[in-house]
Structure formats: structure tokens, C-alpha cells
Length: 201
Image (cartoon, rainbow, N blue to C red; front, side, top):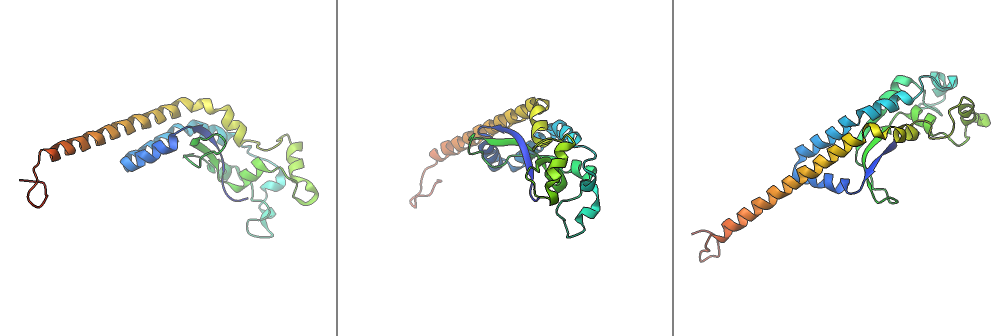
């Protein structure tokens, strides 16, 4: 399985706000996104800890990859699984909710994604998903979705505060920009035009 598994919080209007901030002040934009990632760390830690240290024995043996590079399944190693969890700001607009992600908790480790989302019986003897269920892991999503949704309270206030700070910073930047343009316009009006139509005396 390739790609990234993502679950996250959404808010209306955040993406345009961040785009505006990026246009007005790139350094401030970078600091803001870093702050949102920073305050999301408690949720990242909970999700990392929610992945079991051991799963099906065959899923943890490197020999499962012997037929080809990557194999039918990647090897499940808990240290790599936990390192695969991180927070990322922004993302694509949700066409159904008409909202943009504030922050996404993502899992980039292949074995973790297989464990979390495997649902169709595609292995020899149709045993992989059946064995996961037999061991009590249930249906997909086994970790990501339920862990993030149950623990959003750990970061909601801090993320909301960070978003509010974005709005304040944007307003200040816009007010400063408007004031600067008004001052420039006022100054221009005080200047006469010479015979060539240029400003100045």
C-alpha cells in the first residue's frame, strides 16, 4: 500500500486565511504552521501509542518480503510504525463539508496503513483480515480514525487558539497594508504634475 492515511480536524475558511497570510508574510506563515503542528503533538503521541507493539506473527517477520522488494505486505515494526505518525497543516477541500483541514494526523508507514485499513480478503486462503478480527482488532479503521476522533479534545482548544491568532495577524497585516496605501495615495495627491505628466515639482 502506498500513500498516506490521514484523519483530522476541519474548519471553514482556514485554507484561504493561510494562503492570505503566506502572501502577506511568508515567515509568519511558516511560524504559524509550525505552531499548529506543535500544539498537535499530544494527539500525535496518543495515536502513536494506540498502535499495538505486536500483531500477527507473520506480519512481523521480514521473510514475508522475500518474494519481491516491498513484498505483498511490509513488515510491521512498532518503532517504524510510531515514527510514521505526524501532524500536517492543511490539505484538500472536502467537497461534502465544504471545509478545509486545519490539521491532519497522518500515518506514512506502509505496515501501519495495512494493519489499520485492511478490509478486503486478498491473501492466500483469505486469512489475513480474518486473523486480525480473530485477534480482536475488528474492522478498519482499527487505530487512526477512532483514536483521533476520541482524542480531539486534547488539541482542539490549542489549535483553535492558533487559528484565531492567524486571523488576528492577518487583520493587522491588512490594516497596515491599507494604511500604507492610503498614506501613499495622500502623498501622491499633494504632488503636482510637470508638463510631461510626471509627479514632482
